[in-house]
Amino acid sequence: MSSSVRAPGRRPIWSNPCRCAVCRRYASRAPAAADLAIPLAFDGAGPLAFGAAPAKSDPLTMPGFSGRVAGGASCNASVLTVTPHGNGTHTESIAHVADGGPPVPGLIVGGWMPARLASVEAATGAIGAEALAGALADARADGCAAFVLRTRPNDARKLSRTYGDGEQPAWLAAGAAQAIADAGIEHLLVDLPSLDRLDDPALPAHRAFFGLAGDAPKAARRRATVTEFVYAPEELPDGLYLVEIQAPRWQLEAVPSRPLALPAEEITEKEPNR
Image (tube, rainbow, N blue to C red):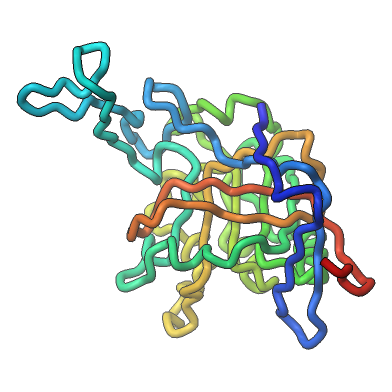
């Protein structure tokens, strides 16, 4: 159930996050990137959460124009209704949980960044920090800016589940979200509809990851992002990747997004001449 996009040629993609005195470099020689976004259909198909209505597409109409070629118009033109938080893959900024935060698009302009993909067995219930300790240690050692959390079972139902009272997925304990932040992760991607339990209005995991826990708002992590409703197919093994998050330039607290992932390796020799 995965899709892919071609990487730019067959040459390595280099990432130099420069997060320490000794700059790390990574390369991917994969011919294509895996698409971690769930396709957003406008015919009622797709995952739902928080009681959101399905995304829909209506014709743009005006006198003498039906908005549909089938209705005699010269072209098709649509008016879209979408709820980013409830209709599929989306990326959030701290503005989701705090006033005055930056909109999402300006936070994901850095291109490819090193990331760790890690899987946990968690059909429901809280995911604690101990379940992520090993993967976060690897992420810190690799200088990762992003962390992709995949929960198992990981079947294709994730592409179309309606989450609610009868479908309570797993969630991150606040301590786990804090551990991810403490590992230096700026961009957290999860295959859950929310970091938090769906019926918890306090959003403790969001607040912990964005640095808003307790009485320390000055410690807010204003450059961090959370991407929810991703889908990492089983053919992608846990490990090191280069990840890029694409999104429209909607100046909002949450926007539909398209994360891409390339398997990566650290390069220790000198970069080849280009």
